[in-house]
Length: 342
Image (cartoon, rainbow, N blue to C red):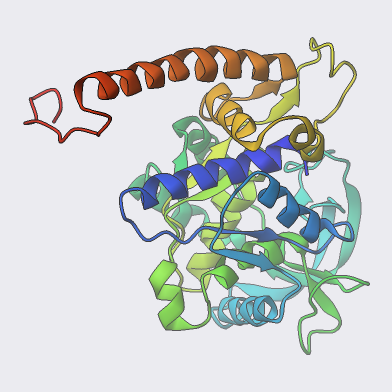
């Protein structure tokens, strides 16, 4: 797992802890899309979250039986609404993301694409262009920060192409029953994982936690989550999430003496040398919301020594000394609130 995966989880954990501190009931969902994941990837992710002391209510695996039930129900609802049909698709296709592209590189991962011509099940995304524009106008904070919302609106206004949600089945993927050996694409199966974690298609359980208040993503997943996902949910007569929160990218600081020439910083390397709380504080403090940031061990030391050891420790020491001197080592009852306190 790299730093970007850790950041998404740390950010989500911070939101969940904050809301629970006010007594709110919070369902925090995480998981893995097993299709294309290296063997043991799910176990390593769980171990990483444990090392970082991150909590979650449910861990969804797209290899589980509940997920297959959810995925098939979602597909059948979209099929019944007549927004999906079998057709020949021809164009550029990313073998990693299994998404189509209009350029020489994948719009999602930036990797190379391949020419692809075959029969598959096609979702009529084109039919949702005006519906999406209307949805964005009614929900201007659907994507945060606003700069990412502007990107999404521009992409939709420029025109939408129909998209494949299946491919000829190979050795991986969940097959569509009775559909000529077709398997769902990895990205479509991955999106359905959010509904699996909410209890769908169990109506009572699903209604308790869906639509999600917040879905956290990295910016490379913006198109799939902010365009494809709400359109698919609309086609299935389901509500989109309330907010898609899109964070930036972490890159190694090549000026760092420890990271010269590195392309990434593995989570296991960081947790092996730094306490979990130091890592989490640095990630949340260092990256301005929505922007990109660089990681360097030297920067972590500066944050820990400057913010935690100096400022917060000094504040804590002073407060505890005042309680000792003036309140007999007991936390005093608060006085009447003044206007500034309110």
